[in-house]
Structure formats: structure tokens, C-alpha cells
Amino acid sequence: MNPILLVLPILSLLMFDLGLTLRLSDFGRLARRPLPVAVGLAGQLVVLPALAFLLAWAFRLPPLMSVGLILVACCPGGSSSNVFSKLAGGDVALSVTLTALSSVITLFTVPMVLSWGVAMAGATGQEIHLPVGNLLVQNIVLMALPIGLGVVVKRLWPRVAERVDGVLSRLAFPALMFLAGIFFVQHWQTIVATIGQLGATVLALILLATGAAWLLSRLAGTGEAVRRTIVIEVGMQNAAQAIAIASSPFVFNDDRMAIPAIIYALLMNVVLLVYVWLIRRNRGAYSMTAD
Image (cartoon, rainbow, N blue to C red; front, side):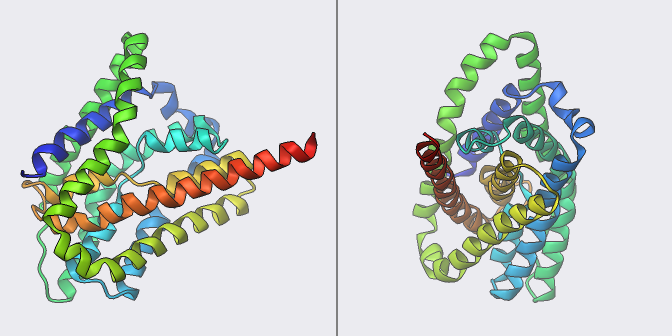
């Protein structure tokens, strides 16, 4: 089975589901709450890609894996981050706003950052071609249009949007794990050969990114709920988008470049689930002490 036949429609469905959770007012929260939104976007759009570049160089990743790591660091979190923020007692409204804004902004920043990543790989002697025009078109077709359609459905038929979101949101994680399983079966030899070096790099990226997000929000003087949300938004990336770009015949057309995204998806969920569990456990202990 060609994975791309599943990746592209799954990504579109996930983006449509994201649109079902958004309202036009979510995009305007930047003007009302500029500081926490700016901190969150800085973590997602600047800190995380910068860390990916640094770690790809420090761990001496092969060029293909370096670009794959930078690729997943460019892709913003989807609607799953909103769920994690709610479970962690975070600021869900801020999470929705960051998801909405980053999904639109990265339509244009992903090609720019990836161009730098490809240039870095080229400096090592391996030429990787990035068709920027094709990438922009694919992002618009597979992301912007489904998100826009979801927003329209939410506005015109809110009850229908709520029911459809209830189904799609439950399918998001199993679909991502199904994709990861397919890629693992097809590329298990490459994954096994690189799992030590690549796994350490990806784990370092997640931990450093979430740590930097916590520090940035702390320095900005945000409240605890906002801080939890920013940590989750920066740490949770859209692995499906990264897989789609890597394996798409219109862009890189190389399934191996999706391996960092697959490993990221697995480790990301483990790290953030532990983070949410620790928060909920501490909140429970605090409640018992207060009683």
C-alpha cells in the first residue's frame, strides 16, 4: 500500500476537524491578549525550528533526517493540543487561538524554514530539491481549504459541526498511529538503524522546546494556566502534516524523510501525557491538602 493514499486524505480530515472547532473571533484574540499569544507563537515559529537546526547539527544527523526533523519542527499543533490543554487545566481559549493563528501563518513560514534546512543539507554534499510552489499549493489545498470549510460549517450548522467533531476528534490519534505503523513496516530497517541517534535527537527537541516554552512564559509573567497551554502548544506538532509533505509526490516524495515525524509523534504523546498526568496528580494532592 502506498502510504500517500492515506496520508493526504487523513491530513485533510484532521484540518477540517480543526476548522470545526474554530470561530472567526478566535483569530482576533491576538489584539485582545497580545502577550500570551506572542509568547506562544514565538515558541512555535522561532524557538522550535531553531532548536531543530541546532540539534540536527549537534547530533550530526544524515541530511535526509536533518530536513525531516526541521520539517516536523515547522508544523504547528492541531486540535489535539486543545484537548491536552483542557486536560492539563490550561487556557483552552488561548490554545484555540494559537492553533488557529499558527495553522495559517505556517502555510507561508514552512516553505521558508524548509528552504534553509534544504540549503543546510546541500552544504553537506547531498542535494535535496524543494519545489516551493508545489508546497504552497499543497498546503493551501490540504490545509487552508479544509480549515476554511470547517469554519463555515461551524458558523452555519453549529450542531452538525459539534457532532462531526465528536467523531473525527476520536479518530485523530488512532489514524496517526495507523500511519506510523504503516511507515514502520515499510521502513523498519532504516528506523532500527537510526533509532538511537534519531530518537535521542527527537526526545531532546521535545524536552528543550517544552522547557524553553515554560521559561519564556515564566519570564513574560503569565499565569499558570497560560504557561501550561504554551508548553503544550510548543511541544505538540502536526506530525500528519510533516508526513504528508515528506511523502507527497508533489513535494519531497521520500517516505524516509517522514521517519523523524513518526518518532516525534510517538515520543511527543508520551512526554505530554506524562506532563498532563503530573499536573493532574499535583492538583489532586493540592486539593486533598486544602481539604
